[in-house]
Image (cartoon, rainbow, N blue to C red; front, side, top):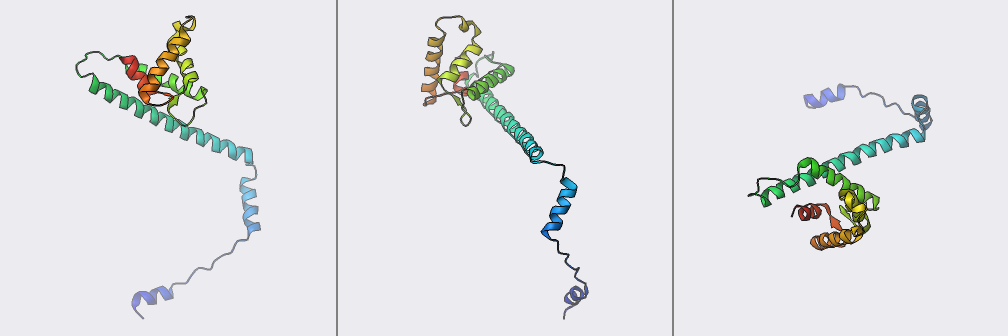
Amino acid sequence: TSPPAAAAAATPVPAVKHTTTAQLLSRAYAHFGRVSNDDIEERRNAQRFKVVQGLESTGKKSVLSSLQSSRELLALGQTQQLFREVELSVLYDLFQRARLRGGEWSKQQVDRGAFHLLYQQIAPWGRSCPETQHLSDRLFTVLARRSGSQDARFCDLVHVVQG
């Protein structure tokens, strides 16, 4: 035999220790017996919440960055920005809140009812105005046509309001 094969044959193989299911359960209960299913579910939910927050934060940064770069391209000759970054961030948060209140979880769009709630938040003077619903409906129609769907998108709202 070759020298490496002889060395491998001379090395003793450790004995495999078999563990029964009862032993595993006993050890698990001894170490983690105080952890209930509710504790596990609570920890899972906390982790899910952190993941969702991270995804939302990343999505917000991406959308705002995209809007910022498109505004820079469209407004090369302008010396004044219509929305500051902080204002866009607040508007985005209001839009997302209206989207979630409207029951929409999967798309980054709002339906007519959710948009009306958003409109009342960004135009508080409209709460007492009798034409609020009409103005909200008209702006929503413009946004929905711009997006080519039955809903309004955040980026379209920003572009329309900016002029």
